Image 1: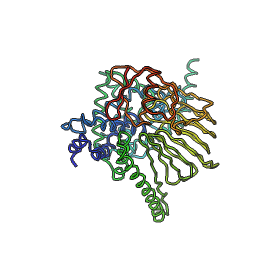
Image 2: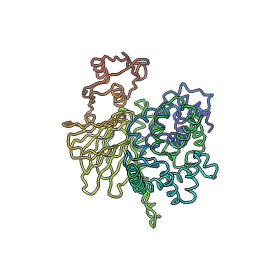
Image 3: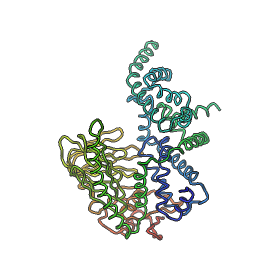
Image 4: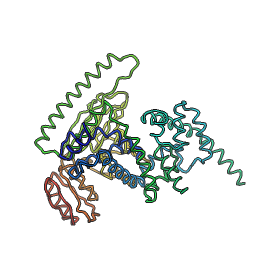
Length: 194
Length: 330
């Protein structure tokens, strides 16, 4: 069924059209929202809020605007507004920080950049060749998921899976190894100060 | 120009999940700055285009359609059709549970060797103005308040009994020494052995709470683990991260008797609660500020009497527009 017809039906109050659109766009929008909020629960809540609001305001939708661009604008604005609030909430901050690549339980400890790069190089040797490829493209070349997917001819989901697995392995490695490194740097620093 | 490049790289790493703690902190600040908008827009467009290839999978259709229907029922349903739908949903969910049970048995029979049996999850919902009493697979009971949902496995496997809650539910858990019962709400986890307690965690509300009527529970929330005994309640403010423990609460789930209780509650949240319980819609007149808090207990009263009470205490007046919509103004 053509998307514009769905939109016209939705404006007319057709509940089936609403459900169809919800199903059609969920995976795409959740992917997009997740990039910002990182938590599946938050993303689901935002997605459902967006569609609840679409239903409530269906009379004001323009039947000539492509539904995709309409959804883009609503979602982007919602997510960015949410980010502005969430970014100041301690609970959200802690959640995001706990998934950082250099996360340690000790909040005052930060791994210095040179050490971090060295440790990551070591950690990367533990990845499978494919994971290493994907991770390096993201970490060193700053490529987006889509760019990596196109370059390696993979689906975005596969890219995400490889990245997620890589990050897990690297985070664990850093956590197990950075403590001893930090200790050495601290001692070295202490000696220099003398 | 160089600053822009660095900003873009930082945001890129945040969005990619390959960020360091410092980059995350920089991003938190960065989202609020006007000058970053063009960069964020550029990255945003890119991610949107990447996302367009993600179409629904075969298994998604049924689950997502149910979610969509739930949204519709939470917003509006004329009473007549609602009862019919309720019967339909109840009837079909019974059938669904039966089908799941049969499906489980067949699956186990044919794939015994090295595959773990798929656990089927049951989801139950309530819409505005509705409460529902549900018996869980182990015999424990949960009473769901309006606009809530609970998800649990058809059978509790392993030693943990885990359920997922959105909204509010009052739990009566059967005591089982070796099997802790765990309620997972979006930002907290409640762990019990056998007891009666209430968990309130609505997405729209700023405050989430857990209260105990009898027994003892352990609550895990960000940055804290709290034990609650009988007649104690913990209140968590999601935006400030503050925790407050209250004692001597004779009944932590007054809503079970149809009572509404507000304790220095901001009027916006009072409105949310009224919407859920009375199945109405409350809007605040544009251009006016509503910095009011409201306290009070109302037993099974009509919506009008609660609204009049609000007017008496805070001075906020109300006007009934068409279609069950109420407007607050000063």
